[in-house]
Structure formats: C-alpha cells, structure tokens
Length: 370
Image 1 (tube, rainbow, N blue to C red):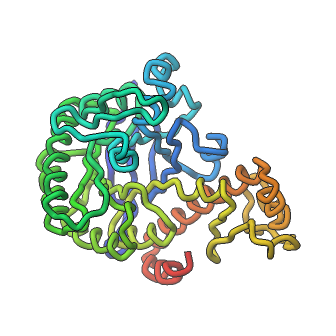
Image 2: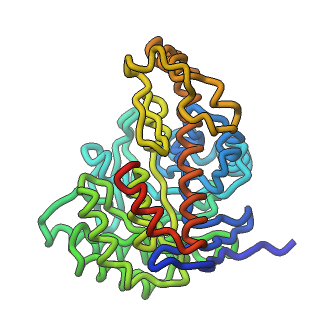
C-alpha cells in the first residue's frame, strides 16, 4: 500500500477567507478547521469517539507534557500515540515552544542546547533541543509536526523580539534537518515577531527559504488585544504562500476565529471550549452562558434545543446548574461535549458560507455576538 503524501489544496475563496482540503494518510481535513486540544493524550472529560462524533477531524497533543508523562518509551511500546489513545484521526503535536513561555519560571533558553527545563512535576532537569523535540514527535508518530521555537511573552522591546526571531529561524533549520524526508508526515514552521510587522515579515521570509509543509503564527494569544492580533494577521496575509495551510496557534474565542478566517487563516486550536465546559461556561449561537448562574435554577429549557448529538438537548439548564453547583463530574462532561460540538458547528457554518460567497455577511452577524 502506497502511503499518501501530505498535501493541501484551496477549494474556494471569499476575499481572504478560504476553504481547502488537507490530505493526509489518516484522512482528509476540511479547512478552516478547529482542533480540540488533547494535551496529555486525552481531550479532557470526553471519549475520543464522542469528540469524533461532533465532526472533529484532527486533534492536538503536546510534546512537552507527553515527554514527561507517560514518557516516549511507553507510547512507542503501544504502537504510537494513535494506538495509545485509541484515536484514528490525524494528530498535530506542538513542539514544546509554548511551554518556554508558559513555564518560563522553570526554564532558560540556550541558543545551542535548546530549552533547559526543570520538570513542573518533580523538578528533574532536562533539555528540549530542536532535534530532541522533532525526534519525540516522530516517536509519537504524529501526523503534523511543529518546529521547536521560542514563544516569548508580549513585549515592546524590539531588540528582544528580533533576537528571538533569529533564534527561532536557527531552530527551524535544525528542526527541518532532523525531520528529514517524511512523506506521510508534515512539518510546519512557526512565524514569530511579536507585534512588529517588519519582524513578522522577516520571520516568514526566513522560513519560506527553508521550506515547510505549512506555516503557523505563534506568539499570539499571549496577552495582546484582539485588535492587536488581527493587526498582525493583516500585516502578513499578503505575504503568506497561497498553497500552504496557515495555522494560528492557541486561538481562540469564536469571534477570534471569525476574524482570523476573514484574514486567511485555515487552522486553529484552543483549550477554551473544553476548559470553559469544565467550569460551567457554554458557547451558543446567542452568546455565552454561565450555567452556574442562579437564574437557571428554574429554567427547564435545554442550552440548544436543536442539538441532536447524544441527546444533549434532553438536559435542562436547571439540571446542568444543579450538576455544577454540586460539583458533579457529569456536568463537566456534558458541557465540554456541548462546547466541542458548538465549535465544530461554527467551523461547518464558516466553510459553508465561504463556499457560498456569503462569509462577510456571516462574519458581520456573529463577530460581536460570539
């Protein structure tokens, strides 16, 4: 059997917004696409088959966390990450670069060695170099591999951002060399540069010379405003290659996604729908609902009466309010699945409206509502 090489084709465009197909040996992915986050080989509070039933086409897992627990050897012994977590759809693995920022008090960056971490679990020291990050991701057998980068905190110090861009370019080259020729896998470069247009363009141009299967925008969703994020996307949208998927890492809210799709982004991930579901926040077409609010104590209507998946509309706001206010696990499970389903509904509607040439109208209707 011949393995299918990773490829991407644009299907239709509505100004900058576009639909496309990512082809992988594990199946096709329609874009724009939202990837539920399964950081530690699980999308929290759900079964993977239920996640798939919402229409999810690909999920994300994390190199740093899986490297620590359960460790690469255990996952390899089970036949790779897909077998380990019983997942037969594509998996994208983040490289660990985000943890350079999120765990900045537990690591330091060395240009040659990589990110030198103290484990947040037991304090054990380890080094995550560009080479090691790629080797781990290949060992996990993920379908889309991310280069090792340095995700820095939001800053107005341009020299600091410029130095980080140069480091990320060097690490991208080393990542590409270690990745080698992997016909059934893809390697994405990560564009950095903070809020500086010239540094974003510099980073992108450096990555284009190296050549990757896709291009991600990193270093966003780190404290900047939505308008600042959209401004960065406006800065680069004319310069991104047309024939490669574009991935906005760690984003975001439904309105973030709508605005980013309008600016040509194809791929998204975020913990927001699952994390919010576990804490009582539901996303709906009429806006967000905090189900813990006392006003729902006698509301016997469902969150979404049109929802047919798993009969979730059988559960009233009244009952969900009770589950959350008594800390019952079922509440987190139901609302998490609801939110994952909503995000997949959102992406289907986005794709439909782009294909129909009505995306701008759809965007304007919901950008301030969701």
